[in-house]
Length: 477
Image 1: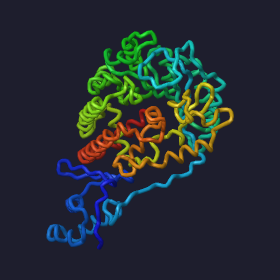
Image 2 (image 1 turned 90 degrees about the vertical axis):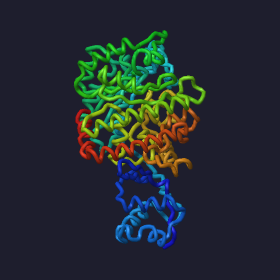
Image 3 (image 1 turned 60 degrees about the vertical axis):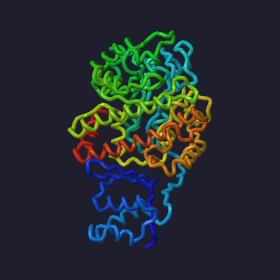
């Protein structure tokens, strides 16, 4: 046998409580190693090149030849050891047409708030806004249904600005979409993200009747929220938002309501924010994301703040693990998403569904890669329009280019769950949507390693948790 070398970029392993769990990076498959496999991998990790006689000398009398051969064969098949560097390259696939599943409608560029970290390039006040008229909205829905192909269920997402400034057109478009969807034999789901300031009993009842998925943008308690989420005139908004949210959570029954927290400079108390939003206000789930910000932006998180956020997320994640091992739900959305990705064996060659199942329409009917690019001057907000249709050639070119990983990603142990990060985040930082978001790389790798250890703990203590948790979540959505 020729010598074999460990291929560290193809796996990530975690030892905890006497158990050894391994994530196979190229496929995101997870394995628990037995003692023979654990010790054999340890030999490869401590020796630059391993020959047959090295294995025999180390393990003769400790493990049977059959045990060692089985483990070695598995490692070779998985590319964890190989005679020379082994990389799993997935060749770019030409995507000439991808059935649409989700269409995001930017109903307005106007918002009644003036959040300091808002990424929209065209944001303005409701009075001065550009709005999507009913005809553009119906053409958008017609496009979605025509491009849905075999998808039996499609989703319309209402976005802004603040979409509830356009509640009248939302009502009309929902009626249109339900009628046209029924005629086409497709179920149409609706969702929106709102700042909650315009929620009334009438609006809540309408959203409830049509089973909207609702996400509220809220950043914590009064001091935390009002630091960045203020009115156009500069006043705080928390008291109004909290009052409306309490009414929403009392009255809305169709689906769980989630909170989306934007972590910006000076606002990084993850645990305190979670406690307030989940335990006190009563949101079903709370998710966190850093503010989209260029390198010199005053609202972006500093490296020190990023480290603080990650440490706090780990602490909250440990609470999630403790509850999951007992079969109880925890409302930390980021952790639940990571556990779901690991449970489902998610393997990404693209960072998200933008361009391959999801597109967005701006107020004028112009088709963009996603809602973050609508209203942008970039090349990624011009993939056709709702009258002439999708510009397939240019969209296909973008998707093909996006499948070529950056050199730094090829050996990254997080590549199959990250795939480089958000296009718009990269565009905002570097002017190039294909560059990885390098500022987050170390945290992402550490987060996935933490998630792997957590997954192993939960799977060992309560293997039924993932089926029960995801089944409950799906049933309520």
